[in-house]
Length: 444
Picture 1 (cartoon, helix red, strand yellow):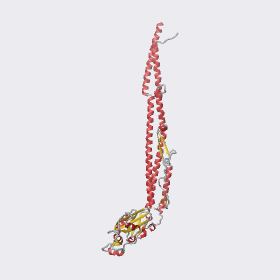
Picture 2 (cartoon, rainbow, N blue to C red):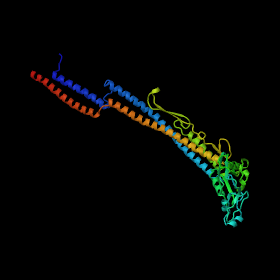
Picture 3 (tube, rainbow, N blue to C red):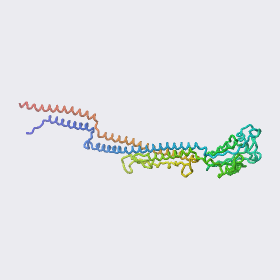
Picture 4 (tube, rainbow, N blue to C red):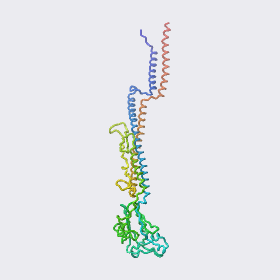
């Protein structure tokens, strides 16, 4: 005979089964921390979260490449900093060589322009007598200084301009000034304006002319009736051949290249010692550039760095390509040093070569600053993208979690409520069973 459950028992049993099922579901959420554990729970949320997590994972994988890119650029930047310091040391070496330049400069003292007899007559020193003498006189004969007259050098007074011509290497300075009341002091001042020679009168009353560089110095004084400062001026034309050199104690040959004032043929020991120091520092630049790589990529060795920023491919891929440069002392225009005038080298015994080397080093520093600025801009871009990628990955992960993660506080509270309901359902089921048992008592 079939046994049927009463309506009360059946209703309470159904409620208890539903409560148990819900309790089991909540317990699973609490155990996994997710409210969507499979596509059955919520197909849209499950697959959307999976897509977001997949992209987040791909972006996180790119962070390693971005980090390597940052380190590669930083390694190159540190290399540039080191090379900049070495170039600074090269500049110091050049300055030391330039400080030892005096013995390599062409110098000549003319014959004295004052005598002891003039000292007795004027009570002035030989130096002051020579400086105060006028260049132009009444005739071609030099007049001695007296108590009432400064004297002159004997340049005839029909000439109205004095010209000077100075040439050192490829640099020439030519000028003319009025001969009216002009003195040796005026001539000295004009020479000192040239920048390629200096002049002074010593205690012997001699005019001294000294080049500011190592090249032979052509020095000439001339006279003329025009004041043009170009080569066409007659005073300057005469100066080019040293027409009036004898009047100031020099010879005409001092104005001619073949017999110009020459520096002593001395090889400076100080400069020679600095050559090895210079070349060693120069080699260290090449070594440092070669050692500025990271993970097999050296931007100072001409390598190319490619940093990928997104997970896409083809034309939709975003990346930064950083082209390195072949950095070396040669490419920076820093040539080797030597004791002789050889093509492609710096002659440490020659002032002009040292000056040219100084300009080359200044140009090298400018190139290094420009390269450092370029790498700095690239580094800023990569670091910005690194931060962006980290933040975007977190956003994607958080978005995925919001779709599938359970609110544990809410689920715990729901479980507690279901457990209470389950207890009540069990009590109700027990009461319904007791009601059915009352029938048995009537039959008994």
